[in-house]
Length: 278
Image (cartoon, rainbow, N blue to C red; front, side, top):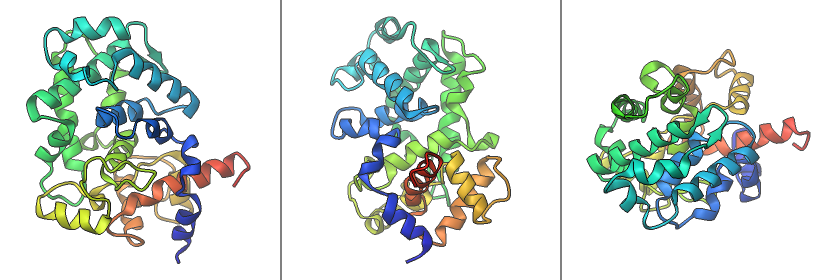
């Protein structure tokens, strides 16, 4: 067993979900609109996880995202009239209520134009080595939605929609995609795949030009980045898209079909070390 697989076997466990934004989503497994819950929770995920939990659960309650009626209200009638009063006054770090409305408008676009967020990504995925080009295309669509919106964006809105095409590390979007694409192993959610075995996912999806775990790119938080530097995979703590791809290429030496499976364990090991518990 490699040293990395030892870290994986030690820390890729449900007992550590409380230290991760995924712990917020765990209670919603099997609930409606879980993809949208993932995107919302993932994009709120910066700062201490306790604050992220409060912000995410506040938004879920405000907009009724875990209710069956959510999309009936979002896709029909006057959604801004229905939703903006519910989120008015919301604040989380740099985000304000109008940023959340713009994100809801993007959800609406994905469903009206493609049927779902998953189908939106699959529309642009053409079997490339990574999910990067599809992510760039989806973000470009979302920025088009933002530009046309009655609610004007601010410099902080761009934080929601960083893109590989602009060189960004896209940590939170990559984290969200990992949650959605990797199999349901008690940690990640596996929502975008009908089977739970990595080999079968890759075999089935490769034939259909769909996104598999092999196409995912490693989200670079401070713990993963520090670990990558310590291993000589990258040379500095600065993060960007090229750095994320380099780290992913190094991880493929350990598991070419599922390189991002190590993310949760490396993060937990780093966090516990910082807290003096690892």
